[in-house]
Image (tube, rainbow, N blue to C red):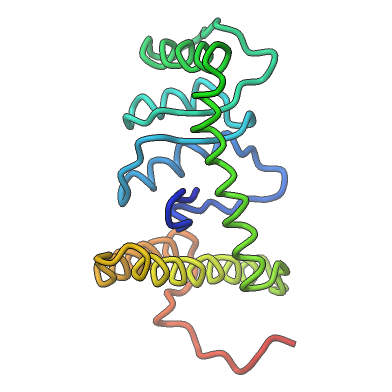
Amino acid sequence: MCGVTTHIVTAVEIKDKDASDTRQLPELLRKTKINFDVQELMADKAYGSLDNYEKCVELGVTPFIAFKTSHNGAAKGKYSEEAKKLWRKMLWMFQFHEEEFLSHYHQRSNVETVFSMIKAKFDGRVRGKSETAALNEVLCKIVCHNICCVIAASFKFQGVDLERLFSSSTATLEMEAVRHQIAPISERPPSCGPPP
């Protein structure tokens, strides 16, 4: 998940290639809401589920998620009335106020911009041989990308509190390292040189 103004990656879940994207959204949104004021969420059709609308209602976020052609106003199941109402409201906006809906929705292209930025700066290949090494490499690329974004934002927006951002990011990284049972950055041995 990423921000649309600074392109900072706000939350990451790295799963295998067959993992369902739509099931990852609630946790990514929850993590992002801890440190950021999320008011809108833009996502493609793959994320269009009532589970995701339920999480948006719970966190007070307006979802601009594209609808599949098979979607209709029927919001059935164990979901709250608020989630069902939001689903119908956003579907109505998607169908009858398409221009307004798309003005929000098209900000989702920022995630593609972030992928492009990371690949351009830090190479699109992952060279780690083991799963842990590959995971660490990808997470390090994201951390480096975020540092670049914070530096750029500090010049662009003047007044960004870098100390707060860096201390918050460090704490988050340490927690993620523990969650993934990876040695915290401060305890890892120094690199012996570039990868082969």
